[in-house]
Image (cartoon, rainbow, N blue to C red):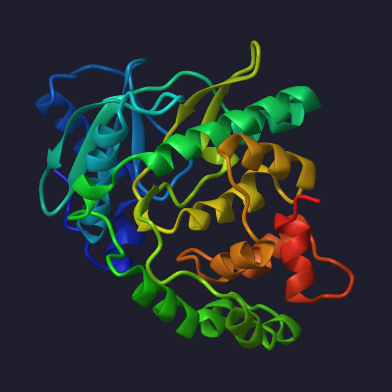
Length: 307
């Protein structure tokens, strides 16, 4: 049985500790009829996730993230079989003990795209980003209505306003330098974002890290990690695309948006980058670099331009 985890302190004490987590995961597997299957914890991810044998994955959500667990199970069931890239099939999901929730899902096949990217030939990179664009187009066309009870933020305009109000302090907390911080208010004021966009189901973390590929032919074999899904403006999903899939390569982003069927103003995407719930501009600057003039409009073009 797993102990309650409702605070940051409890999270830090319990979630990384396999002497606590593994017995709970094993006990839950026994309840689910998977006694004796090899249990291997994945090293990455914010939540504890285990491979259960070769066919299953068990993802656990402490009470502090229980709503994320419910959202993941609901979204995975909603998209099952409806995207051109495989997603995990939900076998079981629900509450466990002491506020914990779980999702038992199928295990996808393939190699993580982030780890494989350096070995992917350029022509195959173009085809892979096109496949990602096509998958996003289908995801964004799905009716998100059945998920409205479980996914935020509800009022998109109010969400944007809240994020805008906290944008400077959020980046200050990540130790962004003053020369960038002082540009944020004026830049955000210059970009018009929709208050009531057509509602789209958003993955919100479209990253190489969340795709699997088959190195034999370099085809997508999986998309996973839907726990932070939202309903809102489809452009919001292209923050992760530009930063973590095409990584500032204008030709790859042009190929992806061509396959997607729409392109977006680079300034709009950088604005959403600053407003994203997980925004960390210093990290992105370390990963992708910045143009010589050190301005946000130039940064928008460098990261999200397709020229």
